[in-house]
Image 1 (cartoon, rainbow, N blue to C red):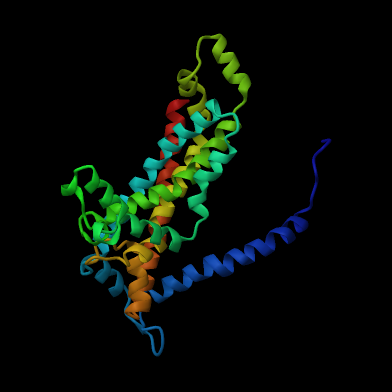
Image 2 (cartoon, rainbow, N blue to C red; image 1 turned 180 degrees about the vertical axis):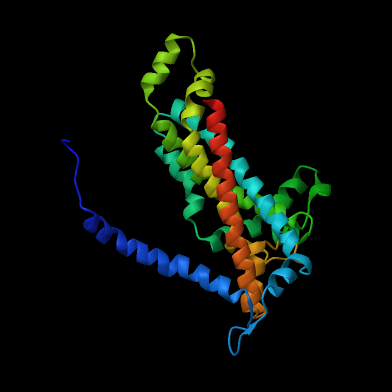
Length: 297
């Protein structure tokens, strides 16, 4: 067949091998080692004692922080999913009404490339009390809503939601970029043909844009959910898991157990459970999208 590049299997294997070795060395092997250590009682040095499933039993039945941290991780996942319909709406508006949207896209994407420390310090200043120059509380105070002012990051009830909003703000531009790229790749001929039949504007988006964006939306959903399960750095910078463990999530709990309490075996147990959560969520999301595609067809 003309135009088809024929490459033998040995050449393909030669090019794939470096990436495969890199993946095995830095992804697969650490996971296997972590699973192995999860059956041990180990302080990171000295002797290791095999305890079987004791670490898992303790994690699921006796750890007062674990299940609340799972629930908070799911909160972050829900907030992350809320970004996607907004990102689709913004992407459609930019594609339709803005002639040169690159500047806006770049400005939306800027929080993604900013240092997490910078973002954390910025939003800590926003959430500070009025006495410390907090912008949010100062705004509420200035418009007569003094009763709404809170010590946002020091309140066990509101701290996790304050963090969720920051994560939402940080990554909304990332999903706008993904969806905008998907919208731009849809042929204008489809919209022109639809306008002849009387389908234009948001009606065309309903029957053309959204169905054709499904594969791109799937990517955003998977990235948002898996990314939220691994939420760590911003929480450590802004609250450190406090106050009173009210912003502790799975990854921060694993970190503090491993590197602060020197329970490497127990920390490996938490990391193993986190990997399993990520795999299960990925499989469930793929099944959900596959079923949705089958129903739509």
